[in-house]
Length: 592
Image (cartoon, rainbow, N blue to C red):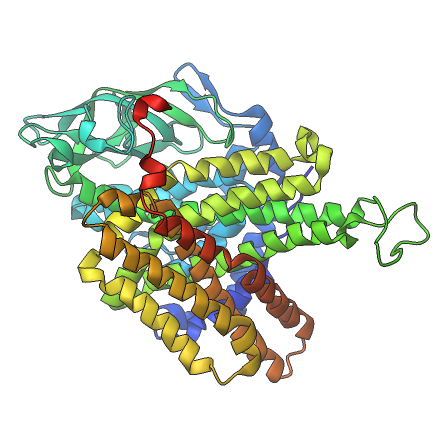
């Protein structure tokens, strides 16, 4: 069975050596001293390793079962959920006015990584609840907040998001679910939603569905869509769940992975719903939940890769096969451990350098969200808006790739279910698809985000990279190994953006055909920036005679690997982008 050990040391490095969160000036972050975050992450790590990780295989093999209209979760999930609730983990960064602890979002993301790596399917129940909480907290009325948020903060009630229908996924303008107004101010919701994660289960006493539907006179397309709160059980005057609402799980989907999470077909048969936010402006409210979810899904990409990597490293140390070409490293044994072989080391370094870079990028993104929400920093808000499709798309693509790479270390044993490596790859695969498939993320990045606010946020990113390089160009070791590769990669990104500007207006396909490569090019530059910053932080620690020199030396060596072996991929992506739309669109549709 696979194992998992919480990488709390590396999380601490990112929070404090890299981001210096307690000195950042962001409201609430001053409380995040090293000893505070250490205590929180250690406790979360124990819960992840001792409780959630052992249930990962259980959830995969047992799955969920639909019985008499109710979904039963795998054995052990209910007890684990109770422990998560009792620990207060679901309200870590929630509003104290509704029972939350009010901690910064960046800490919630750090804790979330541990839970996702340990058991991605299980963590989705509370992850979706947090997203629904955020939507109600931002767009709900005072009465709605008072009714729903306290129970969602404690986890007594959970939440979902209901968007997709059988005939429409990304194109929500085709939605058919109807909302008919009632005399008492409520609505009757009728329609069917599919692929609804955590749509029904036995973990909480009520489930609060957020449902997109069309109310009368809303017009065509997404402009006519509204958002509604549709509880599984109607709320009585005393605030407790009462009679069953007309919403039910009609089917559980059979899936490639995340078997421990209930992916439901949800039927709304005149269910009672309550408008949240403005009528006919439901997309605005739903995007609060979706944008948060996209950061969480980007986290899932590297968190699954982290869990797979840990097991690949352990196997590479234990598996004896062949001899080191430079001389036997295990002369008393029949063979050397496979970690001595350069190609295995290459594989593991690919994984390690990606995971640690993606961790830094995600936590930096979460810190930008804290700056935006807690300080009203519009520049931070614009920057994270630009980076969200990169974090979601690039990190889930690479996360899946790294989970497969970890499986490869096991050879044939990686293809056998008993080692558990298959599950990491299967679970990671969905992250490339849901919350907006990665092709859509790339189109959003190139088609909307680059030009947002006149391109100010992209220019701010370039200026940030240039300023970091200029500020540190006197550091010889940093310049050669980190700053020079970062400068070259950044120029590739600028050249790609310029190509879109010069050709996109004349032929939009010239931009859209290169959008996927641009998302990956941007992702590599982001990780290059993170590695340059982390290398600087590690060098400063070594200069200060840190007692843990080995950790920081390893960090620098890992960063050098990324800069020399991974970052040059920006040149390939630029070449593809500059080839334009002709190679992509050369065949007529009927020629495929």
